[in-house]
Image (cartoon, rainbow, N blue to C red; front, side):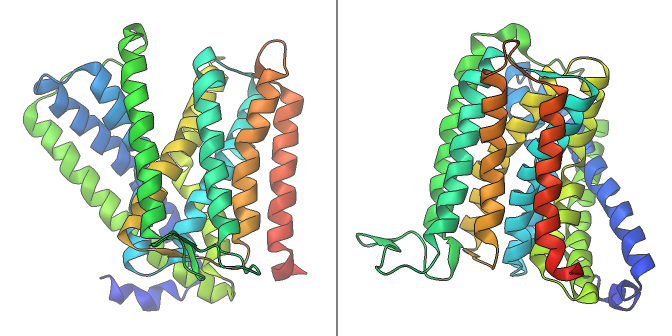
Length: 343
């Protein structure tokens, strides 16, 4: 598909323009899909609770999900893994860091007691899988008769299934908790059926075509620059698929409603690991690459820092100094990852 683009993609200018256009289409496609699906669900009598916990929550992770599934089918494991690890690092270090600079990021008890700890557990699993693939003096790649990861795997199908099980458990908890706090549910206006169907169709088309073009463009960019897919995935693709969270969080901070930013970023990290990475590994086992431990360690540090900053602050928030620290840590890490290319 899109083989005619190969000659065009050889031009750096065309490549950059195409990536910008495709990222915008991907984000808008996710918005339209959410709007259309929400409208249909409302028409069919589905409650605001179910819509908020499924359609909207999944919608914010659709860019990462589509890019990962296409990457998995095309055998681009590095792009699939780094899209998630990079997105999660950007969610905490960059988005929360920028948000805190605009306005201190406050937290709700739900975030402190459940969401951030669950995001931390997800990051621990990500780091565990990364360390699990490294050479050791004994064989710990098997458990009984079940192989969790082969010597070249990052996450096998069994590992992906385990992540999906964690996701199901988390969703069950969210449903139960939301029923006890119905005043926090989102509210959606029903729309005409034809309009809702049109939104769903256009949204799916934008996501499918956009995801295909992003994978193809990112791979070509890596070839043009002579670097690995992992670097492109950590930077360009991860930032592009995190645009919905970036826009939402910065707007929330500008309106001094920054507690939404924390829930938005932490929730995205949970969905990315348990749902997106889990489903991707179920589709095709993901192979390890050079640098996976460092990238997974950064994804692990994000929720850890967020939790420490929140619980140690008397106002239970991330202040501007801590936001600046998050940004400095991320750019230090990014500089270290890119140094071999510019050094």
